[in-house]
Length: 62
Image: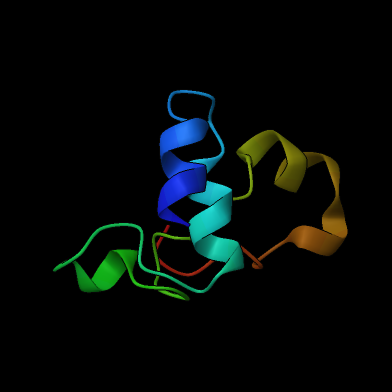
């Protein structure tokens, strides 16, 4: 993981690598722990407006 992080620095792969390996995005922040409220991005409001099946299904924490 350390070698991949160094090799692919600044290419935008780190967030997905951390989530894929069930690691925290930031140490010391419980909201950024794997499965925490802020690790899953919110569903855009326009998608909720366009799809009635998504009503009241926003990801927790948003």
